[in-house]
Length: 159
Length: 252
Image 1 (cartoon, helix red, strand yellow):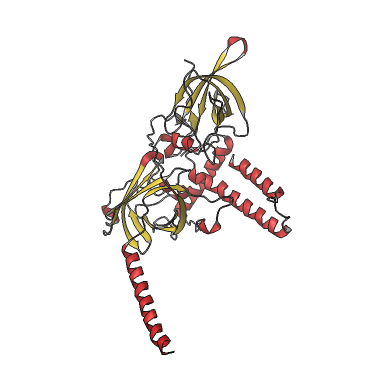
Image 2 (tube, chains in turn cyan, purple):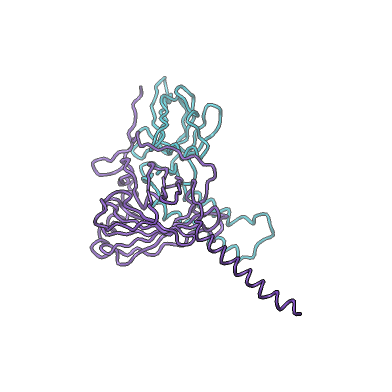
């Protein structure tokens, strides 16, 4: 995610003239290098800050699903949403979705009451690489239609 | 003309008096660091003057360098395979000092009294107590723990904290190992009224070839209310290979 943010940021750095007059080429280059340096710094600080690696989730893949909430665990070290997702011919598949911690989610605008059992919910998640029915939240569309992310900065910002 | 001659020395004397009084008052009143602070990592648009200086290199003595490098390589391989190796935090064990001072975007709260400064970090609700103006205990008399024994003093505007007694199983910055002889010196100061730097120097005559220093930055969070953190619902676990897995729930 951070890498992707960095890529996006660098692309915009590269193309943007910030609405002002075109910059001399040298300054543009300097700014790009500074961006690359910052991103490199973030990439290396990653291991220092993360509670665990997110490598069990396939962060290159995104799956969208809608279903009914059967459980919402507003707990540490992670918040979880349990969802029954209807499939073909009345079959229902159950998914467990991992989120950041309450503190990190509150920094991103979440409240403990944003999800309740029996709510209809749509989630975008990075699925487990193992193929089991679990994943890491990217965004959730909650019952009042708000789209909530998984915390500031890095994926989830877990401890 | 003669007026000027007499006025100048008087002005200088008054200025000198003012400077002396001001610096005296300054030395007696340390800055108030009380409140919540969020880790600050700069980023786009940030003022580079506020960014902490880069860390100095970590040089481990040979017997420690090899296992450390091997562990780092194993961690990198495991991440590539999608089976990250577990850390103590995955099992709800707190970080301890000094890693607790920089955990994702979790804030830290400073409670400042003349005799004691208490630092509470949000992730895992970790607590450090810094006893002011007291001599440090000999290392071998401090029971090894997650936070050790910290004493502090003000050197002008800088809070200097000395910490010993960190348990050897509590890993350091970048997961570096350490011995019971580790000593950590922090120099904490406001670089602007709302920006704090904590310069951390780690000395360990057993494990390190030479001390290393890194600096953490924090920005003030006015009116922030610290969030509780009780690690009660850990659904991550380590499998038989020590890889992190996630407990799934069945359909009810």
